[in-house]
Amino acid sequence: MRVIEEFLCAGGHTQENLVEQGISVIECNVCGAWATKVRSIPNFTLEGVTGSFPTAADRWVKDRALRLKQEEKMIDSHGE
Image 1 (cartoon, rainbow, N blue to C red):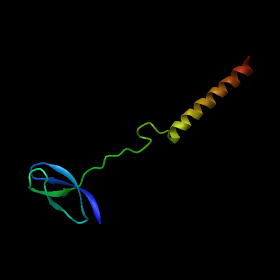
Image 2 (image 1 turned 90 degrees about the vertical axis):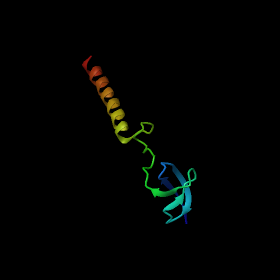
Image 3 (image 1 turned 135 degrees about the vertical axis):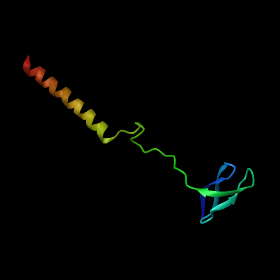
Image 4 (image 1 turned 135 degrees about the horizontal axis):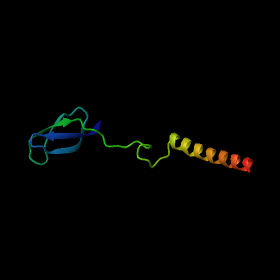
């Protein structure tokens, strides 16, 4: 099975290559030195963290504000 792996050579060049699973050393495309497989941190964002997706907490705050507003109207209408 082929997988995409990230490799780093002694010259500091990084590259991603589609290689057979289990391959840990390849030749660098830039300088020709041996490049070894490295583990890198994936770059992804979970929704809810970015603020572009409403969370349960946001919905609760909105519902609470609406209920407080309705309660204020009821108090004002009974107080007059």
